[in-house]
Each structure stands twice: as C-alpha cells, then as structure tokens.
Image (cartoon, helix red, strand yellow):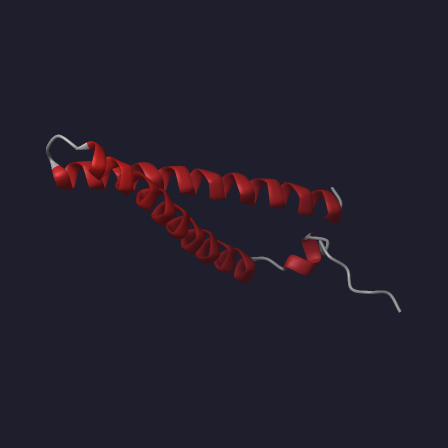
Amino acid sequence: MNKRLNTVFFILGATLFNILVTVAAFFLLLLVYVNLIRGPLSDGAVSWAIPLIFIAAIIVSFIVYRFSLGILIKKIDMDKYFDPIFHGRRR
C-alpha cells in the first residue's frame, strides 16, 4: 500500500472511531442521567437534557480523540506512512 491509500484508510478509521466514541459517550451520559433521576422524567426535563447530553458527548469524544491521536503520533512516524492532505503552494 502506498502513502495516499494509508492516508485515506487512516481518515476513514479515525472518523469511524470518533463516531463510535460519540455514540458510546452519548449512551453512557444518558444512562448516567436516567440513573441519577431515578423517577419518571417530565417532558420539560427531557427536552433540555437530551441536547445537553448530546453536546457533552461531542465534547467528550473530541477530548478522547485528541488524546488517542496524541498517543498514536508518539508511537508511529506519520511522515513515513502517511501522505500530507494539504500541500503547500508551489513556487
């Protein structure tokens, strides 16, 4: 495999990882919310809680993604295996 194909697979894998982490964080935070209330949820509580949980899940996934990417960058040489996505201007 060449560098360009490695780059495409890395982007697809990283995107899938980020989506899975977001979904897992959403359900985990939703589970925590439901267990903390331990009662019937009113419509007003659900109407503001679900969007806040979704935003919190996106923030958590961003933090986990950045942390995981930092570990990956330390372990492998990115220039050796991946092609740059954006090239500088040619002079």
